[in-house]
Image: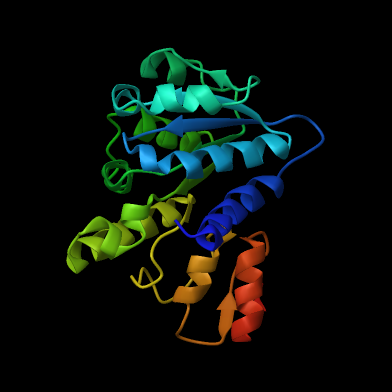
Length: 235
């Protein structure tokens, strides 16, 4: 994956969390899903960036991540201070008040689809809807196969459908980053979004004015693109 694209992912992840950080130590729940080991560099860099920003991480692994070897691979490189939650999904969710934000690195297409359709039948979807109900901050990044059609081999209609699902998650209030800017999710940025990302700005092509709520956050990379395109932001 290109280092520039990876930096933009991390830019969005960290910016959305730092905006609400206070003096006290905050806990970020990290849910690792899927079995694609190629996502390890992105996942590790995201987690390390959060650690360096002063967040306490509590990590849980889905069934597929355990069987596919992601858990073993990540445990070998995770910092000693990271807490791993080995309880069952039901036990985790039953006592899951001890976090401030939820982070899902390299969210799979399967989990993306289920969340968009409101299906709650695995660890990732359970945590997402738990966080939304508790009004927690939720951030999800998409893996390479959902970023580029050449990497996925998916036909254009399917890529468009997945992009549409990503937009549904944004409407839920989830900060979703990494969707391929060549796949148009929407032509307008809604005023209810919590976070405006670089991908959002690149898709905003209908006018040179961007209307957002006063409490909406804009990542640094998105701000640079706004200046480059000479877009007027109206709060």
